[in-house]
Image (spheres, helix red, strand yellow):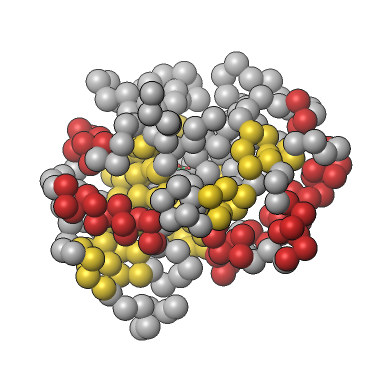
Length: 293
Ligand code: SIN
């Protein structure tokens, strides 16, 4: 689809404008500081249909971002930053992703480097349903965030490869962040079959759409259960060679006030590096996907 052929449609009161790419839509006509139940249901439907939603020109406080995110379910607490600190006083749900330092101390995580393709918290037993990322300061160049449509990635696998991975599961290593930082309390991995992290099927069924979707987590230190490390590495490389192709991905160039909300069950994302001298401040929330007690 290209910009000329993308048709805006109305979903109740929302205007849904498909992105020029294989995933995502811009949602117009919503103030995220004040979303009622009917609008929330429409946004949720738009998320299931489009996987990534872009809301432009939003002016929301951290508390409003938490309130909007909570409409989708309970929130995960933000993981501690690389320096062990928690980011926002009184709002433990907010994670700050930033390269900015105040008095020599980073105010957030991930610095200014590249973040590799990943789904958030794939190494946990119950990874989040989705994530919201809100741009407060952005660099003039770089720091774009890419999204990969994992339905399309699954559909792109040759039939024999798809057959070979049916019923297999990946162990998702917890030791490294997507920015390549070793998490506190972990050691460098020397044998991927011995990592610590959750195990998930490579092909999962999306609980809301009912569609099958590829679930890779991230490439680094992944291991296919029950295989020799050599066979696991070869099979993972083969799957990944079909996955993050340009025809499955869309890269978002941020503007201040953008809020992007993605379905963590159906997309992977990554981030470009940017100049260390520029500032990037993003606030993130994550909606939990745990079974109810
Ligand atoms: C993330 O991986 O959640 C952060 C992506 C970004 O900083 O654009």
